[in-house]
Amino acid sequence: MRTLIKNIKELLQVRKDGIDKVCGVDMKVLPTIANAYLLIENDCIIDYGSMDNLQGIESDKIIDATGKIVLPAWCDSHTHIVYAGNREGEFVDRINGLSYEEIAAKGGGILNSAIKLQATSENDLYKESSLRLEEIIRLGTGAVEIKSGYGLTLEAELKMLRVIKKLSLNYSIAIKATFLGAHAFPKEFRENKEAYIDLIVHEILPMIGQENLAEFIDVFCETNYFSVAQTDTILSAAKEYGMIPKIHVNQFTSIGGVQIGVKHKALSVDHLEIINDADINTLKTSQTMPVALPSCSYFLGIPYTPARLLIDNGLPLALASDYNPGSTPSGNMNFVVSTACIKMNMTPEEAINAATINGAYAMNLSNTHGSITSGKKANLIITKEISSYGFLPYAFGSNLIDSVLINGKSVK
Ligand code: NIG
Ligand code: FE
Image (cartoon, rainbow, N blue to C red; front, side, top):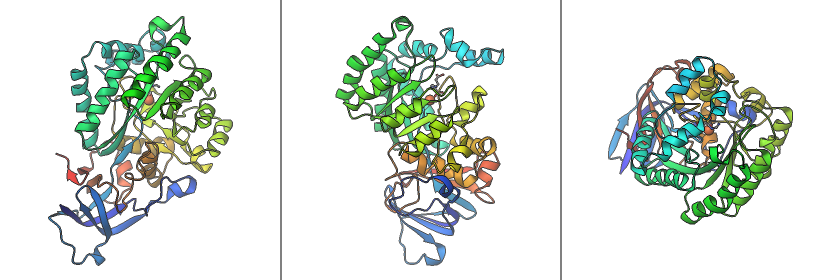
């Protein structure tokens, strides 16, 4: 099956094979072809170029994209979309003056979501989560990472990871699973935190390894959550099962999370709202992708990750949604890209690079996703008729997507 998209006003993020991420000043460059065509065979991009060179190409289906822009689907490298219920009550508590940390200290927050999830059947959890997945696909996401971390018992963590696995089998977008058992200490371990670390290391991790349920390992390395030493222990143990770290660091405090992540060759370190010179210098020595989550900053009213500082120091940056019930009840990557431009002073080119190729890198998917490259998956966004790609972040809140293609097929 061959599909030809023709008369594309501008085809964005056209890259030669072998580019896995973009860093520093290169993030300001977004390679494009004006008045372009794109040819898809089955699930992959096989050719593209200027309409002037479109000759003798046969196809089974033609999409006319006159006036429209085509770009790779968003690569959302950090989400928690498998969860039960919501935390609307805490949202109102925060409006009335409690902080996110105060709510957590009262036993709300992640523990509140864990109670709900533990009481939800695997089937119901799958149904709820699949609705969220379908929603983000319609919003242009073509690859996504999903974390566990609202189970906090062996049984409930496995339930979450099995739901993620089932989603990855039933949906055609790329889905990567991350084990985040170290998301919060369950109440019963408050006075004996080391016992929870032991449970993770000696009971939960071996089961996950055996069932091959997670490619990545995550820890919420933060004051009042998991210390740097505890993070070190968990990441070391996960290495035995071949799990690669992608960790939550520096959301509220800089305590050495970046350093422990880099020491363990983390694929990404995520959040980074609070970052100092030592953190920047450590990142410069690594292949670790910094990931910013601007919708979380927006929703919680906390600082935005200092994108300019990172990029102007020559580092790469990825953007992700953090879709979760507590700090970011939205998986809209269009909003993420807009907010990065509006609140983090990223240019449209930087934000689009961060949400496509660099997001793919943060999921180990750069070989197949994140750019318009022959041989990569035909996961694409076709916009409505718009003036230029800068209009995407500018017109925040408008739905500018005409259609989404996943593996070469239009999403209904
Ligand atoms: O990335 N920071 C830790 N974890 C999530 C939020 C967890 C929650 O509040 O449910 C985050 O923001
Ligand atoms: Fe998160």
